[in-house]
Image (cartoon, rainbow, N blue to C red; front, side, top):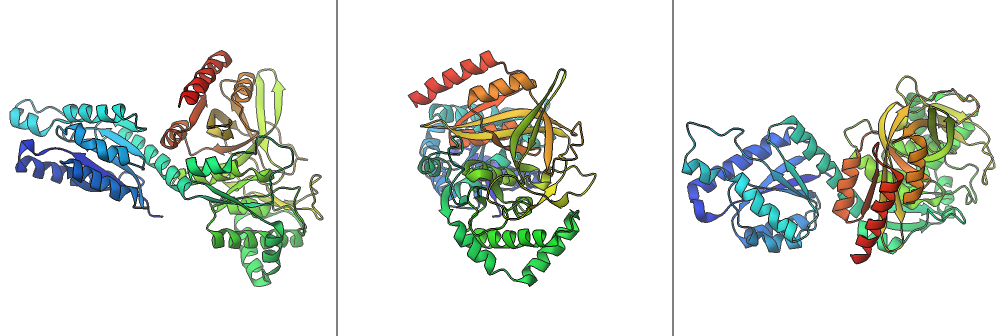
Amino acid sequence: MNYKFWFIVGSQFLYGDEVLKTVDERAQEMARELSKRLPYELVYKVTAKTNKEITDVIKQANYDDSCAGVITWCHTFSPSKMWINGLAALQKPYCHFATQYNREIPNDEIDMDFMNLNQAAHGDREHGFIAARLRMPRKVIAGYWQDADVHNRISNWMKSAVGVAVSKDLKVMRFGDNMREVAVTEGDKVEVQAKLGWQVNTWAVGDLVKEMNAVNDTEIDALMEDYTAKYDIATDNIDAIRYQAREEIAIKKMLEREDCLAFTNTFQDLYGMEQLPGLASQDLMANGYGYGGEGDWKVAAMTAIMKAMGEGGNGASAFMEDYTYHLAKGNEYSLGAHMLEVCPSLAASDKKPRIETHHLGIGMNEKDPARLVFEGKEGDAIVVSLVDMGGRLRLICQDIVCVKPIMPMPNLPVARVMWQPLPNLATGIECWITAGGAHHTVLSYDVTAEQMKDWARMLDIEFVHITKDTTVDALEKELFLNDLAWKLK
């Protein structure tokens, strides 16, 4: 989808046609210039002066699938009662941009004509009140429209809004159910579809096996060439790699046919398959699909959404699992991995991921699955977990610092990432567990905690952020107050 954002400017008739003409020209200029600096086009729609104009343009925004959100600004004073009907009907993410056309007050030129034309400080406060009065979820961004820091903040908000657009249209394909007896991968799919838009449905593993049997050698040969170009083949078991290619081609065909952007499977349900999809799932994630192991449809959907939000970055958002800890005093780390399925977008850039085949001592694999093995890259990142608290959804986000793994682990044949959770390992673990965070997460180097907070606000779900300053006591109080607030809602 070629997403765009609509720029709606507020004014009124009081100042005369000449002022309105100037406002219109400046708004067009601002939209044109900002579009050059933002990740998505900003389309100027109207200088709105009446209730009907505002309501009509917002109705149009609601029903235009390419419109990912609206940005408003009041160049002059725009009485906010005329915004009530439109804002009350708004179904798209909403950013109030508090700026003005001129950077400075022109000392020699300023007079009452200038004041009447340049009333953003006046108009934005009136406009801001009505959104507060209507209890509307919104992002307020203040600053001069030509400044780089302002462009960065609007860009980040736009990416969150695109995450909402992807969410509202997201379909998840589940091959079988989730891993037996696991609690955190459960959830209310009806509530999630009503709240987030996700359609989560199940296809039989037999459907996938049937599709796999229809894949021909020509298709497999083409994908093998792609594997060879992107990855180092570090195994003589080419048949295992070709089997993964067969799985990937079949899964992708089914995803495309059903218009799904994410999928799940489980090692407990591989009836008719020789291998759990390892390399197949990894390469599909590298191409933008979301994935969740053990039937975890929530993390599969979040992976797809965060990949879309991070578009234009380094592509590094991926399904992850906390596996084990390094608890040496003063040198504490968490090791993240999975049996097979970690996206190669996380790989350090100094060497290609390796395709290896090894025995997988869990599940129903008849033969050794091929998988990508690599070390993750260094850098600041976040891990995100969406959990069903019964009656509401909670999005938990923790700041982390990824490091080069401190040991080579030559006998661990999986992709792995090592990090220090903030504020430190012990407190970070305690906070995560206190909040109910899952063992499955999305790890992202591209998407920020602020973007995830904006995404959660746009969709009206609880957001919990664990930072360098978080303490267990403070988090417990926050969660207690959140429980009260959400029960009142």
